[in-house]
Amino acid sequence: MEFTCYPAGDRAVTVKFKQEISDDVNRNVIALAKRLEEKTIAGVEECVPAYASLLVYYNPMQLGYAELVETLHQLDTTVDGVSDEKTRVFEIPVLYGGKEGPDLEDVADYHGLTTDDVIRLHCGRKYRIYMLGFTPGFPYLGGLDPRLHTPRLETPRTRIPAGSIGIAGNQTGIYSLSTPGGWRLIGHTPVPLFTPENPENPVLLNAGDYIRFVPVSRTEYERISEEIKDNRYSPRVSDA
Image (cartoon, rainbow, N blue to C red; front, side):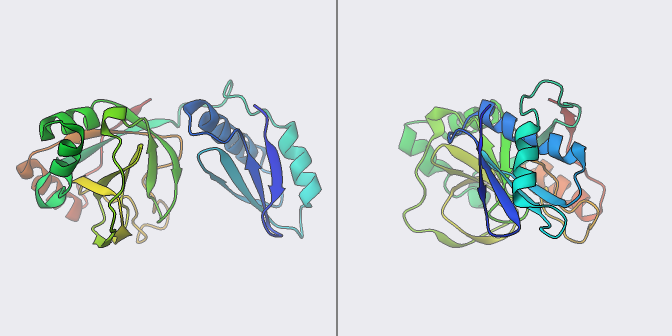
């Protein structure tokens, strides 16, 4: 798949693919990032994939812009041959509605659905993690059922608890930190997405992974919360 490179300051290159939100484009973004990481080029410091672009940070004292761009164009961006064993599906437990999902009824009313319909549709598919952004570990997910596409709140909340599950337009996601935000909140997961106290693996999810939401009762939610406090819980992970 074709792409174009642009300088992003004096230490980074933006690699732009076809500008659309699609699995095909995003798979090529992830493929290029993996191939660049596998090549271990001196001077390349970090790759940050997004929906339809890749930001490549480099050290200009070790690697020139033109040299890096030439290397990028020589890499294969097709998904064939890229190792898929690292692609994972995380099962994320969610308590829907109530104080944990204060906008669930509004989303249902907006679409002429019941709250059970919204939960069923939201849990009825797996979601590709296109990118992480906004805050550390916040996953932007693709694949939301069109019957759940809902506009953002007209007035954002000043504080949304970490773990909140939201819908905004044609996207759904999980707040990794407590922040302001305008997404419509339909549930909450006790599973932490960002744990800075764990320096070896502070972010749970990666771009290219998948999420499947699993509804749980309040009793299950509280049990999982206690297990997390005691470091006895890990989300179920399977191969994509």
